[in-house]
Image 1: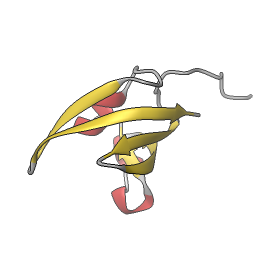
Image 2: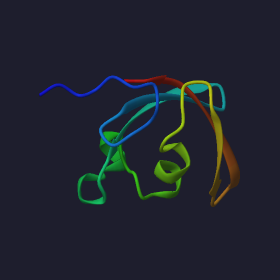
Image 3: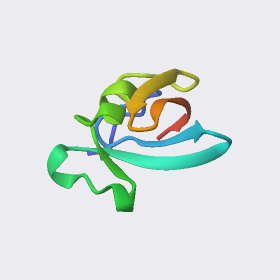
Length: 77
């Protein structure tokens, strides 16, 4: 069974985002699989919730200890 192709962030999506002049890649996973050091973020985390259901080109703001951080979605696979 193959994963349905979509341009929106969903569970299992590998995404590339732009943040402060750098690109970062994450895999959206369940809470049980989350491991930030491995690039796996929970769909239930603040960043996961902000990204979930969004499409390429979307900008999201996440409240972080350093203040609001803005991410731009570059790719969804």
